Figure 1 (cartoon, rainbow, N blue to C red):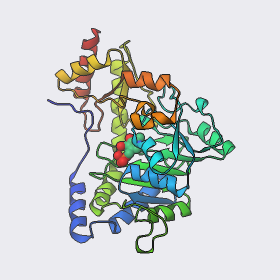
Figure 2 (cartoon, helix red, strand yellow):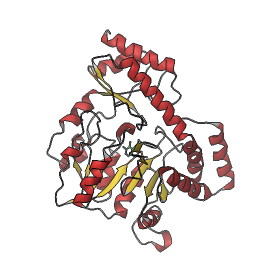
Figure 3 (cartoon, rainbow, N blue to C red):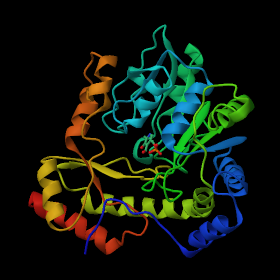
Figure 4 (tube, rainbow, N blue to C red):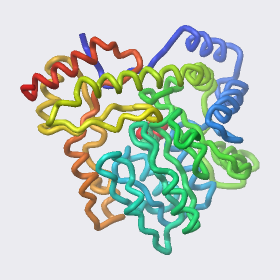
Length: 353
Ligand SMILES: Cc1ncc(COP(=O)(O)O)c(C=O)c1O
């Protein structure tokens, strides 16, 4: 028996919808995409949602819509696409260390200089950032907030869904995410009509034959939207299962001294269940030998990666410690409790607990 780190969920209705869209629609854009946008906007609680072809495109287009060219404050502990999108949009990342417990950006360390135009918090692993404090800083310093929600579909903060808190929210529907479109896809959410209109132009070559901007080919494929619509219907139920599994991990592992567990919270959607572990690489090897596959999210903080070193001279000790110790345990809605318990047994065995 093999236990992977993550696994997408597919059912018959999703397959049927894809076939229906394939037969009845026109491959790119169309009714399924429009409906997906309406339903996603309603679910998040915003006026507009614009579907694009990836989470990275969503971030780049969001920055372009706000015409951001200066510095964008973000975390070094994220998937590289966060910082990459900032550079691709013609701006510069300004990294701020993470909090040692939430592993999200530490708002207390945010310092805003004259060039800073925006904050891009990442709700890492499905845990919402401390958005009240981040929004307070943004208001005071007149900065935009673009939420990177690629890992946090359905997560809530103070009664609002992430993606509805800042000026723009950006989602990814890549195959391993809490919801997917069976391939690449992304969504931009906003209450700003002008942003939504510009995003629609940018995703289609800046307005196609009547181009107003230099844009992208970043449209969503029809069958991806058809699949995504059914995934969206299942999202809350799937997140509930993830939360239940997270609680069980917590109960099974809370006494293991050599690991640090993530925050257990009702609003967390556990895209990943990440621990900090002593002898991390040895533990990963031990689990692999039992066919339990764990991930490392992320082995090198972004500010240490070759193309991004130039943006900072600082060290970020919390991000660096996390990169050296983090381990993503198997987490997906269909993970059986018996499998989870086996993972925990093997972890305890490794540490001799
Ligand atoms: C935090 C974060 N931001 C951005 C992205 C980019 O999304 P995509 O792979 O859909 O381009 C991802 C996911 O891959 C991510 O995890």
